[in-house]
Length: 147
Image (cartoon, rainbow, N blue to C red):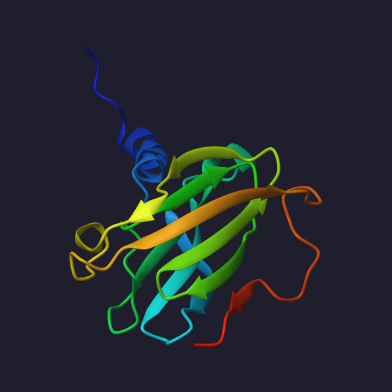
């Protein structure tokens, strides 16, 4: 077997490192619950440049905790937007683009799964909504009922 010349190794190293890169995580927006004690975050995770490499995710956490992209309650592909409606601190509606490919959907978030008190559950209703190429043409994406 013949060894690669040093220039061959130098050319292959960027290709190898590109395959090992970490996904890019971008927070799109955050939406506080009516009391402000909880925060729902919509964020994008991109593992490449193609639309199929992009996944949208939602995380719900106590407002006192920092964002953790490993925690998710909802995720989808082939849609790039969402609208969140907090009805109370324990109930919310999430609207997502029609024809999205749902990859994870939890109808109830129990405290232990998202670092809340184990007795603190949040019921989430999900609803498809017509969109323009996976985006909603609205200015406001976060709604919170008064406490």
